[in-house]
Every structure is written in structure tokens, then in C-alpha cells.
Image (cartoon, rainbow, N blue to C red; front, side, top):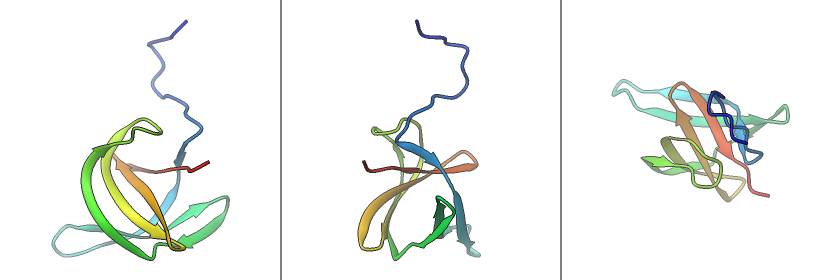
Length: 88
């Protein structure tokens, strides 16, 4: 049975994470690194920023298409929290 009173959906592919980001004078947010399992990973580059839904892990927000260690990843800013889609 589904409990509609739950405020947060727990999905194993959705990982809330700490993000170091740069805020420029134009108001843009540029993520620089993420922390996963107590390890910090530098973001090589951000190739796209757009409002989008996460079909894999649920939720929506500003999606940052990032490359971390040469691999494409999606990082989302959902209201005031960051989450990453985990690839399994």
C-alpha cells in the first residue's frame, strides 16, 4: 500500500551530496566538485545546464550535465539540495 503522507521518496539511485560551487556576479552557479562516500571528486567540465526531471531517480530541478573522471554524470539542484544520479 502506498502512503501518500510520506514527504520524501527513497530511491537507491538518488544520492544527496555536498557540492562545492562557484557563484559568479551574474548569479550563475557553477559546481566545482562533489563528495561521495567521503571522497571529493572534481568536476572536469559542465556542458549543459537546464531545468529537467530526473527519470532515473525521481525529482526535478536544475540539471547540470557534468563530466567527472571523463564520465558523463547528471547533477541536480532540487530547490536548495544537490543530488546526483547514481549509475549502477
